[in-house]
Length: 435
Image (cartoon, rainbow, N blue to C red):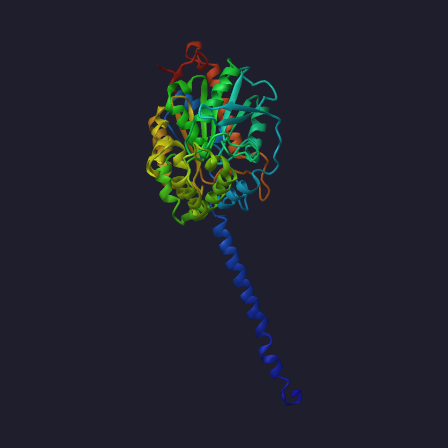
């Protein structure tokens, strides 16, 4: 057959084939790079947080004394501008290198027979103001003091002279059995109030910094706004990545925008595991409000709303899901907070829809004690910092909370004695007491 072929025939097509394949390879590489740039949001610029606040002496002092709030937040170049990757990495590994602070677990018996627990971590040195100050910390949904992001924050705070008390959400610790047919809910403040009361009793001279992450942010803001007595001896409050209104958030959680429906499914699956790990306590006790039908519906639930409707609202006797979300959301209480309040959210948080951010922005525009900081990047509780690929052990979030707390402590230290928080007065940001 080779004898029938002309010598020129061999060379007419062959040189074109490699060129065509090279073109296909380049096109494939270009396509991959395009999607990487789009998915990783690489073209997005870095910028300082968008700060909403009223021009008051306190706010000017805070922004000057806590410069991290006004400087550019720079996430890792290759992946840090993706809210999904920030959120996923936080959820999967928590933090880069997690310290293991040494604490003591405390047990508190509640009126309904439930046993609340919190972990107490002493400071690793004196606070720079010389005062005794305790951070009372409420973690995110289903979280506790053993989570990596909590450990990292606690260790950083201890080194800055803060004692830390971390609430373990009721039912979140796998090795602690429930002693009543109830577990944590979206806005129940009973356990957090018990922890704060215990700290105030054990340390009569201590002042409090209140910190809440995600769901914990809703709980701490609701706690402070429920009763003005709860604000006594509180220097300030910081809430990070909360959604403010569960009723408004539930509609956004059913949307596929930013894969929110997928996150909803994953969080619902995690809630299922927590509830089922305590099924004997929740469904087996005589005083339980749960029935076998509720357990069957739990197995088939694919969203947090279904779990909230079939299980969670019944712990506190709410008749409807709407009533549960209305009464458990801090949006109805947060305007009652008079102590300095820092609210932090991220624009690319896949769990908190941008429409919910009108709540903190409006609050900061109206109330002189509120600062609202909105970052371009950070995801949900991510806020990793770094150069190109590898993030730093401490996150922007860790530094901001401690930096803000330090500024408030210095401000408090220089106020007239009659207006200081240790006297039990809750004052406005301009220094006038709110009696």
